[in-house]
Length: 258
Image (cartoon, rainbow, N blue to C red; front, top):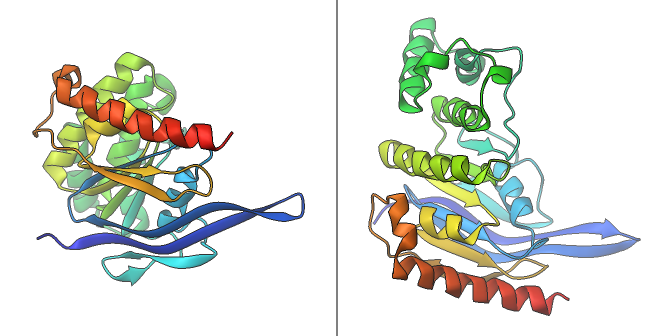
């Protein structure tokens, strides 16, 4: 059995609102194994993005701990790569320059940087756009560049916060397919937050369904669909059954939160 890449234990988070503490998260236990693709979904305001930001070390929990391969997370670090809905590319750098940035910060040699940048340009299909600036790219290309930049510094765990949420439907499906292809090639552990049930089913080995605020794990849904997955699988009866089951879970929580 593969090693546990990421472990969340007793994670609680509250924010102050009108002089009172508003509980956002109450996640007792959750683990992602090495090479596993986990999707996280739940009703609006359930704390799924907050959970991901705690995993990334960008904000602290009030209680509990996140561990990556046994090491407690206290701040952002190179063992975790983070992707956001916004493209977060440096507008003054080319695609190649953006991909190289993390490696330069790490002090890698020029030869290593050039080899790595070339590899991820090829892997994401951006070879012909290496010297383009972000303003010259489509939304899908910007997200490919952002993904290549994160993968280039070789994090152990990739954290993704609704990275395809701002894309049009056709580009979003293309990026879902691209991501599964890259995940299969790299073997990265991925925790992917989304509000799209179909996306959660298509991408995930497991779906973590959070309850209404404060977000607790309502159910873990194991997705037994064959890999590699083509987009055609979304039309299958089994995929629709998973989607309907997750929808029922989220709907029941949304109604409870009214």
